[in-house]
Image 1 (tube, rainbow, N blue to C red):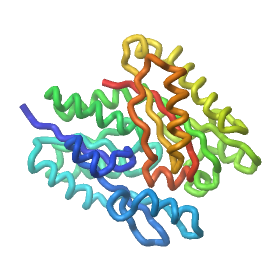
Image 2 (cartoon, rainbow, N blue to C red; image 1 turned 180 degrees about the horizontal axis):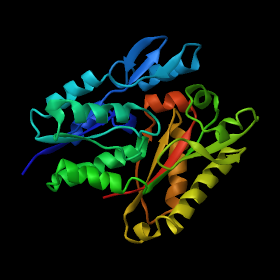
Image 3 (cartoon, rainbow, N blue to C red; image 1 turned 60 degrees about the horizontal axis):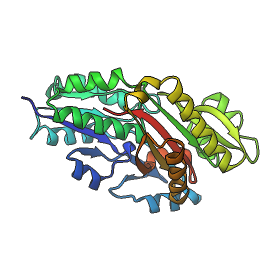
Length: 291
């Protein structure tokens, strides 16, 4: 039986230490600060990142170097027959397409590296990694794991409350509908990701209203799109935040109360390359299929 390894990037919110515990590898995403390159969880911590983001310096993200990613794949393939690579959604970055092409054209990776474009980011991407690990432990091949992740890619929703649209507008991660509300004052927009770009879901004025809006959005998903999966016990909830752990823990308690029969799996800080475009103070929740 072939051994299939799982590799992801730090957009998943999986730290290097957690990756070691899980037995996977995580590609650190580059963060550019005043043209200097830092690597998430390697040369740049969450605390250092937010200190820079709030100051007057230029902060942006970049694609990882394919050669550097290839070196990680080479190392993994020393002890595995093949690997499944789960990057951030192609709807949010060209990284996925770049590395997919690299894996398909580089002779040493052909038939051994499966780059999965299952439209995930952050906590839904992390769940994909956990699902892939279970499938690999059952002896599934890289192709079988890749096919399952792609076939189930739309069985997830993310809802995000942001305090400001400053960083989203700057990074170009908004559809025109969301950008249009950027000039309004005292608005806490609730955004959604249904596989591709961030888009507008609702506009509210209070944090409490934002949390209620996100809970109601999950309820709607559970009663419609994911009704059969909920009844089968196949859905889970997770949370994320940007420098907002206290509110995230409060929100977690509210989600427990609203959905007592659905597991809440984890509460993560958003990865730096995502936080760069969201800004501090954000809260997010997601529901997704679990294998």
